[in-house]
Amino acid sequence: MTSLTRIAFNSPVLNVMSKAALKAARKLIRDFGEVENLQISRKGPGDFVSAADRRAEATLKAELGHARPDYSFLMEESGETINKDVSRRWIVDPLDGTTNFLHGFPHFAISIALEEDGEITAGLIYDPLRDEMFYAAKGQGAFLDEKRLRTSGRENLSEALISASRPHPGQDDAKTFKRQLENLRSLSSQIGGGRNLGSATLDLCYVAAGRLDAYVGLSLSPWDMAAGLLIVKEAGGYISDCKGGHNFFETRSIIASCPGLHKTAMTIINS
Image (tube, rainbow, N blue to C red; front, top):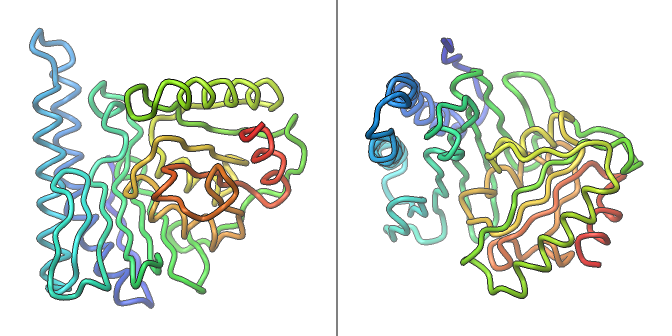
């Protein structure tokens, strides 16, 4: 069982995010234990997990709203909430890796980002089962707990470990969906190893930590990548959308990698 480690942050906003994530995590850990029991039942855990997702989001919204009552919200379950301060908003995924959670697979996270005037200025991603807290503030570096993060130094695709999220049918037109799958297959044929771990937020953290050399995400939502974008960037990684720009929320895509692999990976994805 996780110890729910508390870190002493220099940043007041990261303190707020950490407190909210830790409180929501306690409930998710308890609910995850119940899901493991529900796996053997005929009814299955589907409805229970949906309720767990909503409970975690309610906790996060209450904690963040109490600390910064004027800030707006963009959340996976409840959507957008416009408050007095429209220039600042929390972008929150209360349970990234829902399918993993649903099957009792222990790989999921809570993701919180702060967006100010259209720019992500702080991000925190917490894996409650491993008690790993990844975080970054603009211009201050990226960290896992209190250890500074740096991306890997690999430059050859043949040696690289890359994770990719499969695009979802129905979210893109048939032509785009087919092309994305073909490009992912082309990429996978040239790399040292491939993974599909089921949590975009943790994939981005793993790139920042050098555990993965690159991550390709397609058909993503803002809450899937907002916090991770900053964490990878502050760890020295390269990020772009799949068109080579930075319109992540519009294209719903991201390529995040160590510096030596980004150009090659982006070329293959856009071939």
